[in-house]
Length: 187
Image (cartoon, rainbow, N blue to C red):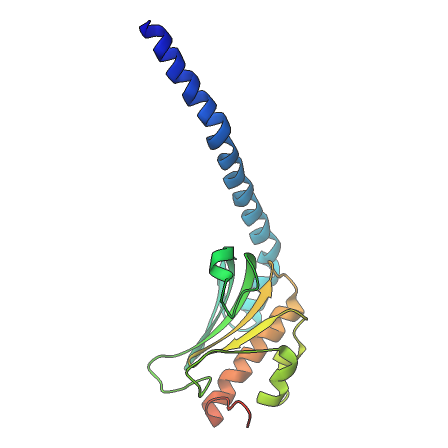
């Protein structure tokens, strides 16, 4: 009788493993391999971008540091729950984010307003003259906040022209903010 209860419990554990553990293990393996392949695909263009802007490729991140600001390029995984209500993401998935952070030790501000502002790339020219951000691919999101700016691409982007335009535009934005102050919306 005792042997039957042990076999019954063992059967339950095996069935549980087959139904729950194996599919989740397969899902995690799939996501891990997908992430590795994305990183391998973007490594070359990202390394060239870092070199062009005088930065470095630090593992999975491009980092460019200047006197009063820093620019980064990252792959970001976003869940559907994180995307809801976010000005940065349209849905769950992988995104490539180019970010500009102003040095917190300065009083520089990207935006005079306290609230983030999402602008289409074609609207940038009304905020900044001759900005490379105006030439970003369709579907790219540009979000300005008081102390940062983000250019958000859907997917793992390896297009050196799009990445170069994002970094050149963010750098131009930082220099404009240094020279003339925050971006004035509607001015």
